[in-house]
Length: 113
Length: 112
Image (cartoon, rainbow over the protein chains, first blue to last red):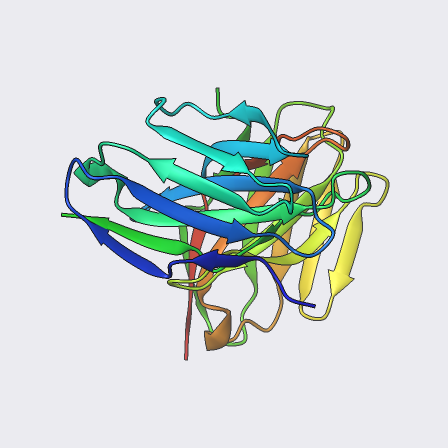
C-alpha cells in the first residue's frame, strides 16, 4: 500500500512568487493535514481538510491556502512568498472515522531566495 | 498556550545506553499519545503510541511509559544505537477531533 506522496520534492522560488505543493493521501484516508517545518524548528499546523472541506487552519496568514479534491488529494498554495517560509512542508493523512494516527509524507522542500 | 511540553531539547547518549525523552500535557481530554521519529530531510514516521488505559507499552527497544495522574508520558530507547540518531516528537490528540498537537522535538545523537 502506497504511503502519503508529496510533490515536488524540492522547489526553489523567488521572494514574492507563488508556490503550489501537492499531496496524495493513503488510499482510503479522507483527512489531510498540512504542516510547516521551518529550518530547525518544530511542526507548525497549517491546514486540515476533510471530505473536501477546510475544517481548520493554524495561525498563518491568508496567503496560505489550499483545497482538497474529490479524490481526497490536496494542494497547498502559498502566495507572496517570504524568505522565512523556506523549509519542509509536510502533508499527513488520517482515516477520518476510526483512525487516530496520522501518517506523514516525505515532505516538499521549499527554498525562497 | 503550549499544550505539550517536551524535554530535553537535545540528548547525547553513548551506544548501548538508555535514551529517555519526556512529554507533559495539560488537557485531560487527550486520549492518544504517539511518538514520531524523524531523520534529517525526511517526514516524521510513527514509532509507537499508547492510550491512557495502559501504563506502559513496549515494542522492541522502544517503550512508552504513561503516568495519567501526572499527565506525563515518556519514550525510553533501550540499548541505543547510532542508527537511532534522529529527532523525536511526541504528540497528543483526542479521538474524534482534528487536533494533533506536537511537542517541540528532541534531537537525539547516539555516539558510536
